Structure formats: C-alpha cells, structure tokens
Length: 243
Length: 243
Image (cartoon, rainbow over all chains, first blue to last red; front, top):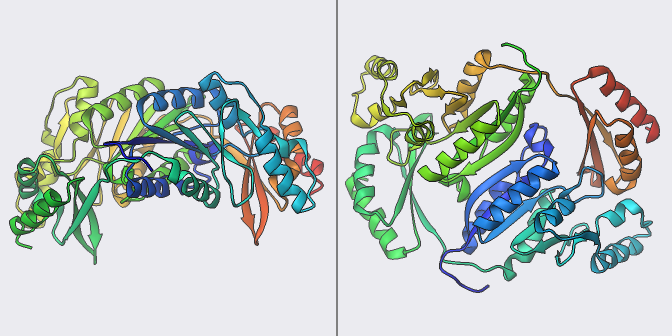
C-alpha cells in the first residue's frame, strides 16, 4: 500500500432485491469497517436498481468525486446481471469475453467436470482495459477499471474480493476513534459536549444515543488522525463530564 | 391512503457512524420492506456524512426525483445533529423553535420531572412550514416538509415514526412477487431463465444465488403488479425448469 494524506471512497450497491427489502444488505457495514481500518474514508453510499441508466449515472458521479468506488452485485450469469455492461458504458469501454477470465472459468469448471455453457461464459465478460479481481470462493472474477472495483453481491465472495484487492489500494491516514460510553440521556450531556467540540475543532465529536440496561444512554465518539490530540480531547472530556 | 399508479421514494441515511462502520444500518431494510408492502417503490438509497453541504445536495437531488424522501438520523439534541438545519437550507426555509414541538417536549419532560434545557429545546427546532411527525417512544418529534419525511436514526423510534406517517402517504400499485427456490447453481438455469424473461417482458425476473444446505442454489424472484400475469409467468417457469 502506498500512502497519501486523505484517500476517499464510495460504495455503490446494485440490486433490486435490496430496494424491495427482500434481501437485507450485509455488505455496506463490512466494507465501511474494512476501509476505515486500512485508512480509506468512506464518504458516500448509494443503492440503485438493476437499471443501466441508474448504474451509469451513479458510477460516473461517484468515480469523479472519490479516490475509489466499490460496487457490489450484478456480476452473475443471468440476464439481470448487467453490472459489467453498465460499467463499460460508464467508461465508454466495449465489453466482451476476456481471455484471462475465460481461462479462470474454464479451468475451474474443467477441474469439477462441469460443462462450460454460454451463461457461464457470460461471467467472463468484462470492459476492455479492466483487470481481474480474484474470486477464491467460486472463480467468477470481479474486475477493476480506473478507480472502480467491481465485486460480487454475495457477502462471502465480496469479502474475499475486497481483502484480495486491499494490498493494491492506495491508503491514507487512518481516522482513529475513541468511544466514551456515558450512562446518561444524550440531552443531559449535550451542552458540555458541544462546548468541548468548540474547544477541539480538529477532533470530530459525535453522539450516539442508545438504550443500555433498559435506560437511555449515549456513546460519545471522538475521531481524529492525530493520536495525541485525540487522547487529550478524550481525557479532558471525561473530566468535563465528571466520569 | 389515496391511490395513484406508481409512487416512488428514496431513503437518505444521515450519519458518519454508518460510513465509519461503527454502527451497522438497520433502517434501510425495514423501510424498504415497509414501503414495498404499502405500494411505494423504493428506487434509491443514499448514505451521507453529517455535513450540511452533503445533506442539502442529496435532499435536493432526491426530492426532485421521487414522490417521497425518507431521511433517518441527525435530529437529536447535540451539536452533530444538523439534519433540521440542513433540510431547512435545502428548502430555503428558516429554522427555529416550533411552538407545537416545544409543547410536546415540555409536556413530556414535565410529566417526568425532568428539567427543560437549551439542548432539549434544540429538538424542537424545525424548518418553517414543517409538520410534526409523532414520536411515541421518546417524544422528540420528526417532521415533514414538502415531500420529505425526517425521522430519527434509532431503529425503534424510526419504525414508530414511519408507521405513524403511513396513513397520510399516497400509495400506488403494489409490486407483487413470487419466489421460486431452485436447488441448482444459477449458471445452470440462466439460459432457460433468460428465455423466460424474454417471453414475459412485463414481469421483472431476478435471480439471487445463495448457499442452501451447503450447496449452490438460487432463488428466482418474479415481480409484477398484475397478479394473473405473475402467476402465469411463475407456473410456466416451473414447467420450463422441470420443477
């Protein structure tokens, strides 16, 4: 991984099944946590339908704006898997069977005595200029073109793909965080907390209310890429709140 | 509920904590399923940071495009709760303490012997022209302005707010669906499935691979607002797949 100050990303989830509520997304949280841990800041997520125009517009808006775009879904063998064609269109690249991807699939199926069909070959269709993203789970590769990384929607495969591409990603400073759990209602600590934020403008402070042991409580989260400022802000906040 | 042919919606999740991966979103799936069940089609979801410019841009893009926009998050008492101000800015409306919301909060705290503070009063700040959205869980209201419904981020409160506003929403034709589970790999049924889609262009057909009992399997999902076409397409698909 090479280092640069701030590296950003967006996630684009492609899938009617998420929008209908039939499938509950399990990928956004995993990608968010992984990117944060390696020093890439996730700035935006979009979920769009299996619709070429929607995918093209979202990919083009996001890739212009962030260091990376990670997509999930729509790269299987069926007619509703239109991600490769849509990404090709977004980049103005032709889409066809890629010889490297075809070999991966042929080897995989041959080793299992499974016939290579036209539907299976469809999973080797990539935009011209794309690099393969390894799929150690079920062979059919994801791909990468420009700053866009295209991954499967099935969580186990998506996770393997994301971990596989990680060493080749540029990363930046990691946003560190400290969580201070407070067993009081959020509205009771709000004024002290706001005053503390004004005192440490370089440390982002967020307040996340929740129920703890049946009572209103709050987690105060401080974030900064400067460990010593973060520690100082956390320690002085605890004092200010009599913790 | 009044009826209209197609009613659409977007969800806008507001929150740094979702983008950092610290909190896993639990609202998108609930809202998606609820809207589908009442005849509102969720077309897009965005997740943005606690950043006024990002929120304003997203709200304005989405409210111009869909019948409704449902937002979650950022309406609490702390300084990082900037949703009301951001929505006000998106609509060009001033934001101040709303007398109705203030009364709801004062009554709630008085009944509990809790002091009304400036931080708590902050939760009564709404854009001018907004209507209250009832919060039966913890009193602090959501609000509705134009076609935008602003809800809390805590799942139990969000759910109560969404269910509360439901009777006042326009709804359209419900998208019905039939799921056909097939215990074969997706790539084996892809050709028959695509041919079937070409035969029923008015029925949307999606294929969702998964593991079932340790083997590759697939759920085929057919969707239409015409129950008899949907039934016919499902029955003939079963025949075509020898199920």
